[in-house]
Amino acid sequence: MGEHMRRLLRILVLGGILGVGGLTGCAGKKPPPGVTDLPRDGARPASGVALVLGGGGARGFAEIGVLRVLEQEKVPIDLVVGASVGSLIGALYADTGKVLDAEFLAVAVNEEDLFDYRLFSFFSGGFVKGERLESFLDAHLRNKTIESLSVPFVAVAVDLRTGKAVAFDKGPVARAVHASCAIPGVFVPVTIGEATYVDGGVSDPIPVDIARRKGAEVVIAVAIPPAVPGSAPSNPLEVAYHSAMIMSAEIGRLRAREADVVITPEVGNVAYDDFSRKKALIEAGESAARQALPAIRAILSARGSRS
Image 1: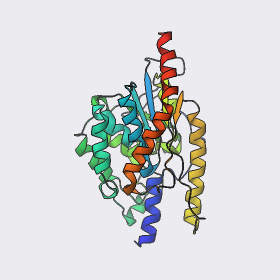
Image 2 (image 1 turned 135 degrees about the horizontal axis):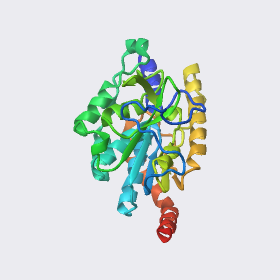
Image 3 (image 1 turned 180 degrees about the horizontal axis):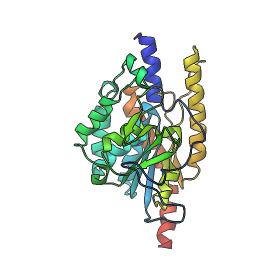
Image 4 (image 1 turned 30 degrees about the vertical axis):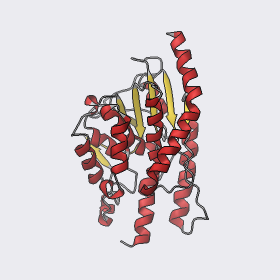
């Protein structure tokens, strides 16, 4: 595969979703393995603070900076919900509930640890098999199940047959995150039970609704803005890609309005496939989180006065 095509594929893989649309909802009456039928609005089994992490490719490293500040300021996190790369960052954090552990792995990882490009995998539904991603998580999370994580965690994926969003809150962590990151047309879709899944961002780039339906009383969402190209895209694939990113970001922005607080790191024009800017991205996440602290404290204070 030529380097130019490899880079285009890499951008698509790391950037987020290829398709966007009005897919909504949760699992059906008989959820597949790892998926829990979520309660309807008003039937909330628990309360607490949820952190919702959206997609953004390598730009998602900014979410580590957000987590760092929330931990330093002792903001409670009772639930983590992630879609696409947000599910990866969320799982690394939920493992121990300590940002330092998640940051160590996130900073150490590189593209080759996560992505196995295979041209002929296209005939199976994508260019990336996803085995490296799953192996990385199994190795570093010690083959854990979602139930055994230190912080309650949900990975959001989309059932390719029904077009509905599903919430993985049990079963193998690595498999659930793999499904949540399986960008359609790039990753080979992930089969779990009798269902086939693709990237959760297709339905809900910032799944605030899932956090609410899981019982969260307060929702803090992290929305990574799209990269703005320094010049006009030079070929049809790049045009389609940047158009999809703009649409995805707009859907995510609308979804994020349902959160109590939205944190939007200023990540500039760092490319979706740029693993060399992790420090700057983490710092951007920290800065955005600190700006949001007054709003977070206000909502938590109001919640405390009602309890």
